[in-house]
Image 1 (cartoon, rainbow, N blue to C red):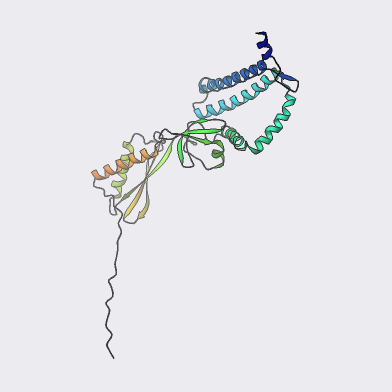
Image 2: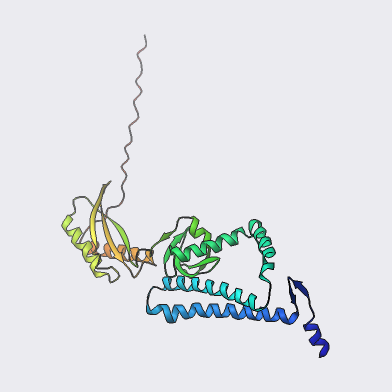
Amino acid sequence: MDQFLEMLHYPLFVFGKTEFTTVYILKLVVAIVILVWLSRRLRSFLVNKVLIRYNDDIGVRQAIAAIARYIFFVLGLFVVIHASGIDLSGLALIGGALGVGIGFGLQNITNNFVSGIVILLERPVKVGDRIEVGGTTGDVVNISARATTVVTNDGISVIIPNSELVSTRVTNWSLTGKMVRFKVPVPVAYGTDQDTVLKLLMEVAAEDQNVATDPPPSIRLKEFGQGAIIFELVIWTSKLMQRQGMMRSRMNLAIYRKFNKHGIVIPLPQMELRMNGEKENKEQPNN
């Protein structure tokens, strides 16, 4: 046992004025693990216990809690290092080596981390938002230091690097609110009574419980197309903004059934072909 204890306290290496033994390293690792655990608990406590009293937006709470967690972890790490007796002046060499490493091999990681801080501070994207980036559409469920997790309608989790959300074009359906607008084109045959079409389209919008009443639905004549007059039904919804295809399908089916019931014709695309007859060859008289 004495030999085992002596081995645990045997100096493995010296950094500055500090001797690192097995026991010393174990204590340092345990302290850092506890610090990480406390920082995670702090984030959860802020989101679910404290900030919920002042803000109902989960994205705002998540952003504030994440920033608080990073600050707590950095300050706690300095306290742990100082309490363990490590000479902080000796970290200048490590900092220089780390800078070289960042310059060569850690550019992407550093870029993603800085981009994550920018996202948390500016909040162009936050947890709970509906976004579209790089052909991927889904709900933001988590923003970490390196990447953002987006869940699609198929239940697939897509991990997007934070730098991509900062440097590329992102469509945020929820940035200005939890309500989006849909435009449904409706072709009708020429000669159809306009008032009847407007009345039926307003009935379709009023009968769907997912269509908002404020702002109210509206109808406009979009264009005079080839073989059809194109009306456009404009509706707002906050319930099916995550399922755009479903919302459009519901409206198209309702319009089709309503028009069939009242004899409104939705014209099919038509093409008119005209063929010129072959010219008759006339015999020239012989001289």
